[in-house]
Length: 171
Image (cartoon, rainbow, N blue to C red; front, side):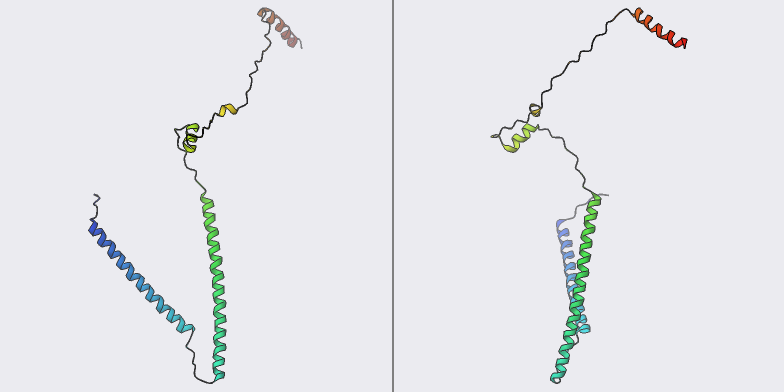
């Protein structure tokens, strides 16, 4: 397969086509939303008849107030459900992040010494000495002198051991 680059005019033409199609879709969605709102309002809020005497108008007002109270209760319930769902989603997102864990990046080798790095960060005016060995406690080495055993005649040592052998044989 050879990778052919698209001509800039062709790319621009395709991009403009995609944008025009998307704009048409957005307009259609807006129209559908308006139609859905009108249908909902016609279904749930019929037009009040304003003809009649004062008693019928008062009755109509009472019905409208009852309908408003019912709608407010439904809205409150929906807001509570949405808030609960949002909180649960946030908790689940936090759990996902916790389960994934934090990956530590691989350390890169630094070619600068600590002195050079501090000098680069602080500037040449500040002279910082990072001689870490200077702060260490001085420890004197103690030479343990083990008493040198008298190296004697090895034949005498064997004779001393021979007595032990006799001790085990007699028992």
